[in-house]
Image (cartoon, rainbow, N blue to C red):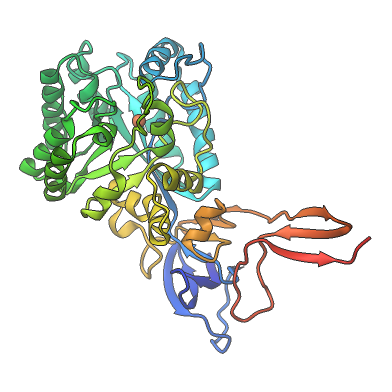
Length: 447
Ligand code: FE2
C-alpha cells in the first residue's frame, strides 16, 4: 500500500513536509509544495499543519495485573505494600484467558492513542508462570501492530521468594525479553545486592537487557540504583540497563545525589519515572510536610541521563485509574516533576516517545525517516507543548504502513449568551500555511 501524509510538521514550527510511504517503509520526507508532481497514493492524509511523529512508546506498564482493580478487594490504605498483598490474593485466579483478555484490551486502548511500542513487566513469582506464557503468546499475536517487550519481573523477590532465581531464569528461557528485579523488596540489603548480581548474571548469559524496579520506596537509605549502575558499567551492559521508579532519589541528600548523578552518567543506564503512580503511592507514611515521591527527573535530565515516563498501572491493585494515554502521562509529568518551562514541557513529550524508545532499545526501527518502518502518528496539534497541554490524541495512527486508528473530531456545540458556537480544535483548512488552532471558535448567527 502507498500512503501519503500531506502538510505535516516534524518539528515544532518547522516547515511543512509530505511523508511518502511505500511497502511499509517511509520512502521520502519532502518539503511540502503545491507545485510538486502528483504521486498517486492508495491513501492520502491531510495533516493540515499538524505534527507527524514516531509512535508513542510505553516504557513501563504491568499488563498482567491491569484491569483488576477491586479484585478480590480494593487497596484500602493506598500503599504499594497493600497493593502487592492484594495482587498476591488475586494471583491464584489468574488464567491464560484472563490475562489475554485484560492485557489485549489495554493494548487496544494504547494503540488507539498512538502507543505502538510497549514494555510490560510480568510477575514471575508464580511457579506456573501462567501470566508470562499468556503475555508471550499475546506478544506474537499483536506483533504486526504493537511491538511488545516482556520483562520477567520477580514481584515478590529473587532471593526472598522460594525458587525466585530459578523462576526468573525459566521465564527468560521461555522467551521473556528483559530481566527484572526488585532489590528494595528483598528481606535484607545484602539480599537486594545479591538479587541484582543474579539478574545481571542471567542477563549476561542469555544476552538480555535489565529493567529493575529499583528503590521504589521513600526510604532515603534505599540505595540500590548505585549497585545496578555499577554492575551495568562493569559488565558493559550500559544502556541496556534501566532503573525504574528510583523514587528514593527524591529523598536523598544533596551530596549523595551529586555523587550518584556522576555514576549514572558514566554507567549510561536509563531511568523510568512513573509520575502518576509515584505521586499516588509514595509519601503514604509521611505526616506533613509530605514528600512528592518522585525521582530527580529534571536534575538527571540536565546531567545527561536518559529519563522516560511510564504509566506503570492502569486500573490495578496499585492504582485504580489510568487510561494508558501518553499525553495524560506527559501532562502529569509536567506537574509532578515541575517541568513547566516551555522547553521542559516539550521534553515531556519526548519522554513518552523518543526517550522511551531509547529505553526499549528501538534504534533504527523507530523514527519518521526514509528507510525506516512507517510507524507514526499524526497529531492535530501545532507543537509538542500544545499536544501536552490539551492532551491531544492522534487523528491517525499508522503501523508498518497500515492504518491502525483514525479519529473523527467531534466539536462541542456551545449555547453561549444567545449565540451558538461550535468549539473545536479545528484546522484552518483554507490557509496555505495551515495550522491547528486551539479553541477555534466559529460564531454562528444568534437563534
Ligand atoms: Fe512498576
